[in-house]
Image 1 (cartoon, helix red, strand yellow):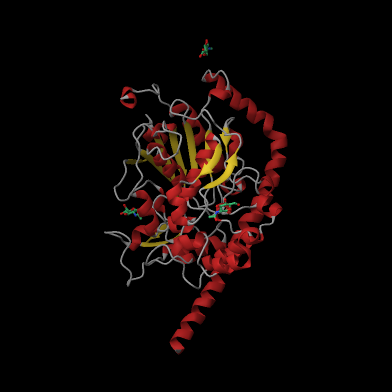
Image 2 (cartoon, helix red, strand yellow):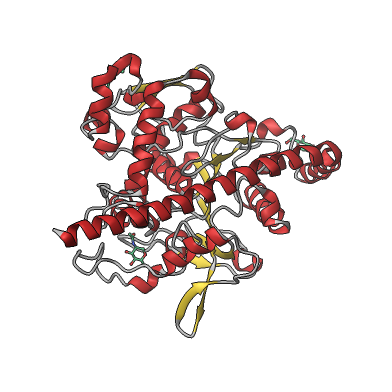
Length: 460
Ligand SMILES: *[C@@H]1O[C@H](CO)[C@@H](O)[C@H](O)[C@H]1NC(C)=O
Ligand SMILES: *[C@@H]1O[C@H](CO)[C@@H](O)[C@H](O)[C@H]1NC(C)=O
Ligand SMILES: CC(=O)N[C@H]1CO[C@H](CO)[C@@H](O)[C@@H]1O
């Protein structure tokens, strides 16, 4: 009895400390984001013209009659992310979308599952009402139909008008799931979809292989699906349900977790429905149809079982790392110039031990493979999809390592940086910010295209 009480007290203390860490950390990101956005807006006033001139001159080199002919580059946000128009016009990609004339930034819900995001992304581009699919909706207890896009953002999208995708974190996995859905012809009334609708996939700290961070925050390592009773995610769950239940229009316009298709609003479920959700009998957290289960090691294995790397699509991935090995021990790299709260998160992950009484998530699992990390994801998870089969890949150290740039292979670069270095606040990444996005956009525009979109093997 006393032992139990003692354990609960310990858990509560741990919870308190970790939520404090995350709260302050979140606030730190948010405030620096707002400050960054302001200074960005100011500097834009002064420098916009010069940037535009340099872009134009690059375009003319390629003889493009108009930007309308360019395949769009679609930037897909990750967890807690948001698209264009949310948070008072803040840019999740820290203004990187201004670097090219044809960039789209969809808003896919900040905590919804990878599957639901992929469905939404399709209709965002093609237009029409989001159809989550009958079977999936029934299984997860949400409406089959969602938001209506009166006007698609790229209605001509097809094999001959393919798209470049850039995904941050979970956004990279969303793109892979979408590509598989296209290959599987999973959209009703669109019989002609195929994998070649996707021209290239670029992952920035992509969550391909899951992350041990989910277990620190409250996912159960036993099943990778349920939540520990006392945990940060438990608080998050309660907060989200209440936020959605109050359903205050201007607030939801400002920031939306994306669970509208679950009908959590008080107008629809009343007080008993709220209690049901809070008790864990209904809603996204009950059915597991939200993002965290997809980011556990177990959840990623389940997703990856169905996903392929396709031969005519270009793949590039940036894996971030903020750790180093010192005498065989993995430690956060560089104590100077790193925010103390970020330091704690990285340190935490570099000390990860899988609970000994729980079977390992896969055969051959070793804790040490998962110690290198960027504070949110393990580096091993970000390079390329590895499970259940290792997908073709090549490490890039010098730029010449990926020339010629071939489709069907995951080229990857390891970048010294934390998980949020390339989003929200561009000042943090400094010169690296421009280097990375410029090379992404340049690769899309100059190296990734198919000469013959209708290769004979696609016709047959
Ligand atoms: C650019 O391409 C168009 C058609 O694709 C062609 O008519 C035109 O001559 C080209 N211009 C240059 C400068 O190559
Ligand atoms: C949610 O509400 C809409 C109408 O407002 C209804 O059509 C839909 O069936 C409801 N979904 C669920 C899962 O209750
Ligand atoms: C969860 C998962 O997919 N894990 C894989 C990640 O990468 C390692 C190293 O290759 C694989 O062994 C795991 O199976």
